[in-house]
Length: 250
Image 1 (cartoon, one colour):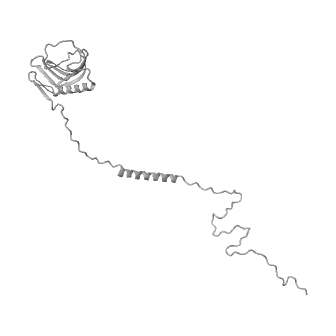
Image 2 (cartoon, rainbow, N blue to C red):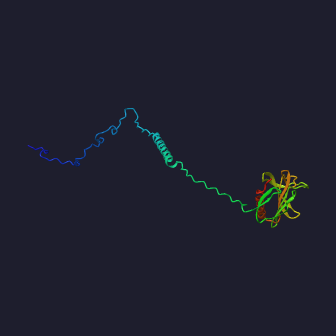
Image 3 (cartoon, rainbow, N blue to C red):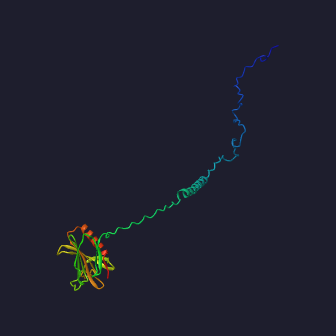
């Protein structure tokens, strides 16, 4: 009896890939197996006849960053206001300083000589550098006082009588003499090359005199026209100081 040739024969071995205990054997014809699948991981199968659509993500709102920026600015503004008000905007404390003690102005005429004439009722002060000649002052009318300093001269006619002449217009300015509001005039005497300053009631059609108690008086200062402006200014200032001390006593 013949034996079956396939009996007692060992089948040829089949080469299989090594098995990894940490991996699972997956069939190439199926999608990979995912543990704990979620809805997002599962493929979406469209219904038959409907096109495949993809969900568009919604844009994030831009309003929140703007509101947040406004809030931050408001907080910083309020905080900065209180910091400025409490630390920088405080009113400075006023420091009282004592008022300086007024210094009395020295009287430039304090050491001057005093001239007094009882007959004509006048008195005034003058610097010691001026030399007085009053020999013709003892007459009741047309009294004359002459004061000299170098080439400058002050001439005073008191209670004049019988004056006359042609009136003329003078250049001048208002001047307060004693209690009289009169004028101080300026004149150039070309005939003798001198300049003059005098007192007058009026600058127009004037004889160069002024009145007190209805009596005419004449007071003038003359000096060489060659004097510098500084010399003339100092001389006029001294003339004004003499006039400021002049008083009628009767």
